[in-house]
Image (cartoon, rainbow, N blue to C red; front, side, top):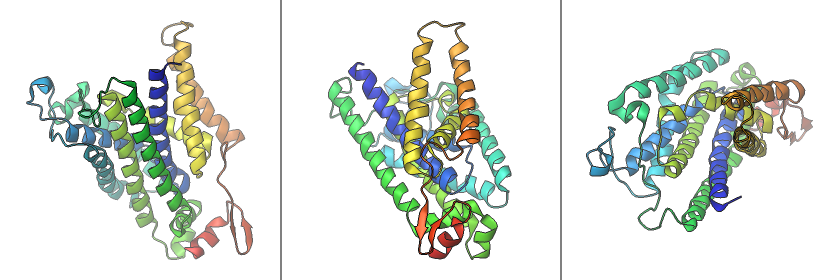
Length: 334
């Protein structure tokens, strides 16, 4: 394994871990089936790109059209990416989460993802349409040689710092009274409402927090890839992240990390290596990859619905509380 490949693998792993932690907060802990998760990652990527790029009238950038172009120094683009994800979550959450039932919310969010991709794909003056944006400046490229191995180590370190920050935030949320309230809402929304909780406010808050973390993951990714286009954030990418959370263990931050390492990183890398072996028709391995992801989800839902690392049981004054009754004590404690 050469250094370049290992660096790529570690950075992609860090991005996937951040994304899975965000989706675990929304889906695993709160029960919000956010099938539009990828658009918040894309919003962060686009925001980071236009904040770090010069205007499209610059000599090297005149081949593309996009709004903005502020050429701001690092880490402002990454912060802007997180803010963009949070800001996008507000209108989407207000429209989808307030009046729709949980199953309708999932459908509406999936449709939102498709609509957003179609709009950006066809509205070229906004973000260069289907071609996307290119030549996105990498963080600290004026201070370091981006082609050197030392820069790859620097990018890995920056990504690791963001992973640690997101882990800290996610752990604080899950282990706090607010986290217990979220699990109460997830397990029995009607009962949580009867005990004085506001499910809409809870969903909006965690939806916004998850959107911010997703935006940060997109900002990290676009800074590494230096390109971003609608073809990179199609809705099936969200399904891969859902598979990771389900396989790793829904509601468990460690499970989300394990799932990110097993599915988006490990499983996709194995299939990519198989593709080089010229087994069968050219599109056989990519097609089988989606079949296997679907079988992964079905298999774990059927045989191990709690994942490899199930959500830990929480012990209160009266003793251990099982999953289906934990919301009662969790809500009172909050």
